Length: 492
Image 1 (tube, rainbow, N blue to C red):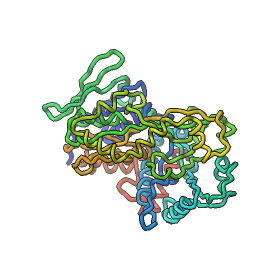
Image 2: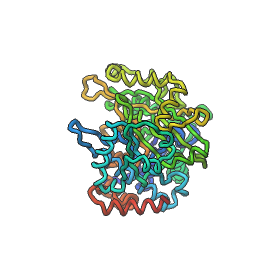
Image 3: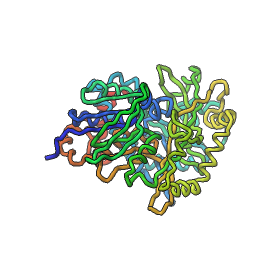
Image 4: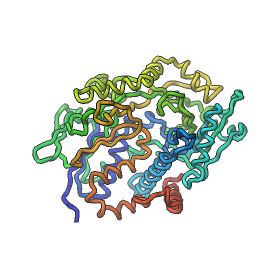
């Protein structure tokens, strides 16, 4: 038997991760007390906000960096399979929330949209061909289409192909099962549902100023109410720090050993945005290319159809830049305050190893709109300056870790979960494909930190996520069943 004692849980940050974890816990243990604190005046307004990301439902359908070419020329598809399965888990959970009337109007947060990979140049065409050959035999990717024919590619993406005169080889793959996801709207829907629950308190305009262990082993979280400038103290058995870029300084306040030798490299994103319907209506897809040689995966160029605030738009980017803020609405002192004695060597070592990334980011900061339009024209040859404007997107803080205790810091690309040894404190750090795989990530948090409850939770978890604890990669019949079911519920 597991301990049925009521737990007190605190969630910090009202983004997609906290909203997901809060929703899961409430479904599994509706008698637990949950408090969620957000320093802004609404949920989903930082990294989860629809203007702060490209809204791609990351399922490895078009993102080339999820398939790695090995030294012998073969393609490792394991990451693509894992991410696709994780997105399927998210879809199942979102569908369950719709079916239970916890959230409504799925078309407001998820829409079907083809995902296309597009490359040019003999080297990249060869890579895409090998990628297609590695993925297409797998059930998850069996509907993928490959083409090197300009006429076929023009039908898939007329805006990108119009005016393309180069003689170099080109190629593309297309999957019609892709999605555009408004993570901000989804987060707000989940947060609104949480606010309706008697056992849950959601407080906005409330910033966490301190986290410390108290004598009984619980955590005391100090919260400043920004409306009346008062300090409140709350205690919890379990704390989840899901505050985006703000998670690193909060994790440092806990002083747990796992918080040592960790830092962050803040990167801003910018997109060129087009709202001209004559142009927008020519592009009905998300098209991802190959990152420039020598640059990190975050530099992958992509042209995305988006549906935001009732309007269709196009976003092209991302254009990276650096700055000291850890949050878009943060402080210019964020990075400097995160430098501690235990992580200084880690940060210096990471900086020395990543001079090319720092140089690239500085060049991007200094780039004019004209330079950015040049990059856009590699995708959209006839793009006109007057049709596109620059929009600042969200902050991403790449995790810098001491990988072996030697002080040799490395910048990590992706999502990192930091757990305390006693399973009472968890922080989520990092970036893409986080939001798309949020449910799978939060299930990992539950499995690791609440293992004694899993036996009792199993039936409910299977109800919410029919593929829970089963491999979709190894069960094509189950994959088709859950995909068809969740797509119906989500009107895809």
